[in-house]
Amino acid sequence: MITFHQVHKHFGRLHVLKDINLTIGQGEVVVVVGPSGSGKSTLLRCINKLETISEGELTALGVRLSDKKADINKLRRDIGMVFQHFHLYPHMTVLDNITLAPIQVLGMKKADAQDAARYLLAKVGIPEKAESYPSQLSGGQQQRVAIARGLAMKPKVMLFDEPTSALDPEMIGEVLDVMKTLAREGMTMVVVTHEMGFAREVAHRIIFMDEGRIIEESEPEAFFTNPREARAKLFLSRVI
Ligand code: ADP
Ligand code: MG
Image 1 (cartoon, helix red, strand yellow):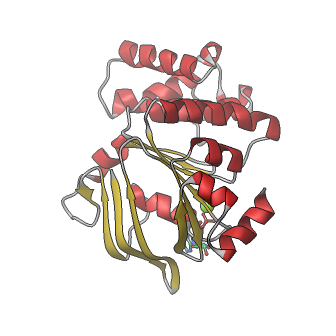
Image 2 (cartoon, helix red, strand yellow):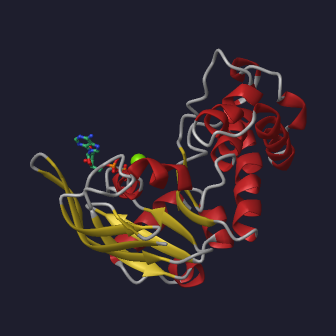
């Protein structure tokens, strides 16, 4: 689904991704961990071309992102992204937040989009919130709306960038539970998170990044019980 081949990314003189090689297959759940500033968000944002790579080759869903003829809008429809902050439209109801893109971008009929949205709200555990406004919801509920909104586009891949980092501790579990369900259903997911319990339970693979490089790539059990790299050991000793 996604292939990085010798990818580099610079912001001016700052070299933030260094020789990234990574392949993510259909149905895989890959969790990206590493210290702040190591390039995790940039790696994720390159996948739907929110950032442009400087060098190398990046392919997502069969599209070469450096190809000038690549249909980036189509790619972004197929790749959902959930951020740390929820980015819901404050002046729109939950239902309107979720149905906006399906109606305007996919051309769905309003009634069909609303049916789909209500189904997704039930799936994320808040069917009763359809007519609420974001400000009337807790952070955990808002993030679940953001996930439902992403799913409403029927994406082939979901990217999550620290989706629980802005939440109060008691709300983290409800968001992780939704993500676990998605993973079990076979969604291809790339997740940046500091939630090591989630990573250990759900990930097929852990990618550890430091200073723009992938330092270690392991199965969760191996990563958590016996990280090969000293920097990964140090990181784990700090976050667990
Ligand atoms: P992480 O998500 O692991 O914390 P980021 O990918 O956000 O790391 O950032 C990696 C490095 O790139 C950091 O040094 C950050 O300051 C820098 N950076 C990120 N985005 C930009 C940008 N738009 N312009 C300049 N520097 C950036
Ligand atoms: Mg980040």
